[in-house]
Length: 202
Image 1 (spheres, rainbow, N blue to C red):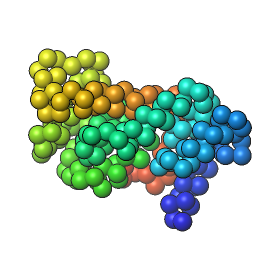
Image 2 (image 1 turned 180 degrees about the vertical axis):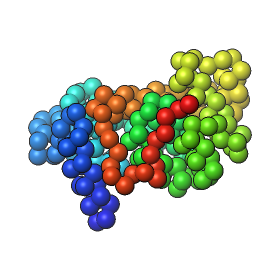
Image 3 (image 1 turned 90 degrees about the horizontal axis):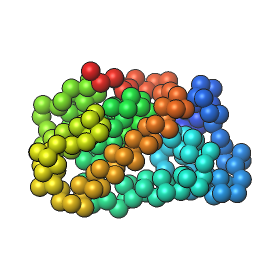
Image 4 (image 1 turned 120 degrees about the vertical axis):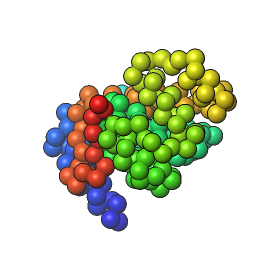
């Protein structure tokens, strides 16, 4: 109940300030309604976040929902590494809502407070496990240069194998799409989101 109350409050806030009015279930019809019902059942933020923008193009958004569910439930990448890659993507895209939503999930999945603090401050965390360092270097390099070096590729391949390397690449691409939707919509953070606010990369 408390989560629902906070979500309704956040929804009202986004509707006042985002570029795209916040859609509610009763505003939707047809394919849009079916997608909205799926979002309400299967996402953490309901119709807010990137999902509000996605409702404007339901046919395009169906594959995006499939990817969301794949990375949430099916990928063999460890959950903590999934969340680390998402936070790095949100940071590099300056997508505050992406950081806001995934910061507490990352803590739950075992990312250390020191790692998250340094990441939030746009520094390379100094105390990372080997696999975390591989994800950090791969994601940061891909997002900043739009490619990865042979050395970075080989480290990721050795750590994760081909399938998980492709999953990691596609995870970054998928959450880059979500970040772009958030930024185009100019979606703000809810009031009270300061502990998880994004700080721009240096």
